[in-house]
Every structure is written in structure tokens, then in C-alpha cells.
Length: 427
Image (cartoon, rainbow, N blue to C red; front, side, top):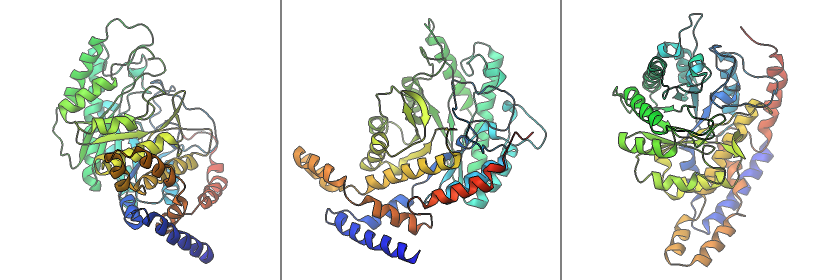
């Protein structure tokens, strides 16, 4: 261990010299990185199951593939898995909860009647672990969402049920933020849409706007809760028309001072959300990112450090947006170890941010402003082979988490001693 630490520190010192020659302060980059918190999504740990047991269907155009053993079956199992994952990721981060992860203590209530008390164990646990919580109403996996409509439903009674659910969830988010002293982002996404040719596109959007206005009518302290709205281009069963489109929610967010959520999987497969960030940030104070990886469609593959992720991170750093952007992950893969999926995706996100923070941005801007596009391209290519790995290893070492693939040994051990004991379901 001492030899490994010495090698890491020596490699880091050489990396500092190489980056320093280009005017990059590596220590400052690591300090900025340490201030970034990623919101890890609870639904990766149990395949978006939750603990209500009110519907056997996931619904909402959502699909989780794979049957890797060891899925979390109870809130305590999910919290245990999450604790292991966060112990293997450098930095201090957050958990992102859906409303269907409420705990009822044997007294079931419906979603329109949820209160902070149904999440008290989550709040107590997060306080003990020094974690923040973000929150989401759950507009799927419920009998009132079986036909694919919620806040745009033509039935006023069903629509009011979902409005009341949204109101309840904002209050829960505010209670979480106040209790933990860390602002909760409460994000609204609905699955509503049409599979085939749609005649009335205006009506559902009018109902959605009215529903959102009612949900947001109660004033909450922004120090405790921030509201976000999330768009989608299409989904399974809503291939033709989605009322909550990007244009709809962008307009709503600007007009009503809400966060717009940009999900990396919710646009055309050829689009990247990186280019949207600087455009949107001219008109809203803050945004929420849901970082995912779509393959051919919104397939929510585990995030990896690819070109799309790198572009997102670069845009956040180059634009000076890190203080105004809330970064969350959103994927669910049941074909591999679920704890490993958290670790792989989150470490990839942080690594991409580190690479962006280590860019010689001042030199690059000077070259661009001088019209020296040749020099700009040459420098961008040169940076790609600088020793990022040495800086990353030092960051992991300094934060007391495993370096390289050492984290995988701990996940394998947990799988054999804990996950392997999970067989069948828990009532």
C-alpha cells in the first residue's frame, strides 16, 4: 500500500508539471471538483421497483432489462447498497428518491396523501450519512396511470389526484431540504403521450399547464426546495406526441422561474444536451441535468466516459456553470451488478468533470478570440494525451476511496457475502 501511494504521488507530481506548463493549476482543479455533488438515483438499486407494491407493471414507457441477482428488496437493503457505492466514489454526494420509495410502517396511503413522515427514515439516514436528498413525484406504476395519462388526463378526478400528488411531493421535498440543511430539487416528469396520429395537441398541453400552475401555487422557501420540470421527445407508447415537450417545458420554466431538466436520453439520438446548456442558461437561473446514455433510443444505459459525457462536462466548466447546475444520474441496468453500475457511472461523471477542469481554458480562449483555429485544434488534441489518470488516482487517494479497479474487489466481496443471500421477494 505504501509503495502504491508513493507511485501515485510521484506520477501526480509529474502530471502537475505537465499541466502547469500549459497554465493549468491542478490543485485548484481538484479543489473545484471536490465541491461538486452528484445526485445518485435510487432506482438503479432495485430496477425502479419502489416499495408500494400497488402495480405489477412498471408502466410509463419505462423498461428495465436483465435479471442480475441481488436486487434490493427493502429500504434497508437499498440503503446498504447505496452506502457501499458512495464509499467507493470520491467526494460527497446525494441520493435522488422517487415518491414510490416511501415507507409506510404497515399503514398504506395513496400517493395523493403522502407526507414527510413517510420518508422520515430516509431523512434520518441521510442526516447520519451527511447526504443531501433530491426528490421526484412518481407518475407511473399506478392504477391511475394505467392508460398512460396523468396531469393531462381528460378525467378531472384522475387529473386532480395527480395534482394533489405533485403538491404533496413539493412539501416533502421542502421538508427534506429543511431537515438536512441542503436544498432539495423536486423534479416533475410525466409519461403522458400518444402512440399514433394525434389530432388534439393543444388540449393536453392546456391541461398540463393548468395542472402545473396548481401544483406550484404554494410558495415554498427556495433554500429548502427548488422545482424542476423535465421534458421528453418521445417514449414507448408515446412515439407520436408528448405534451411535455422541450419547447413546452422550456417556456414554462422561463415564465415561472423553474429549473428546466435536460435529460441526456430524452432527445433525438443524434442530439446532445451539451449544446443546449449555454443557450438555456441565458434565460433561467439554474438547471437540472439527468445524465444518461441512450443507445438507439432512451435506453438508459450505465453512464460511461464517452464523447457525449465529455462534451457535457466541458460545457459546464467552459461556461462557468458548475454553481448553477444540479447534476443527477438517471439510468437503470439490471444486467450487471447494480452497485457496480452506480460506481461506474458516477466515477465516469466525476472523471469527465476533472478532464474539463484540467483544460488550459485560458489559452484555448485566447487562441479562439485571436482567430487562431489551427492552434486551438492542435492544443485540444495535445491535451487528450496529458496524464489525466495520474491526477484522478491522486484525487481518489486523497478522498480515501479505492484507486483504479480496487473498488471492484469490494463490490465482488459484497456480492458474495450480502447480495447472494437475497433470494425471492420480501413481503
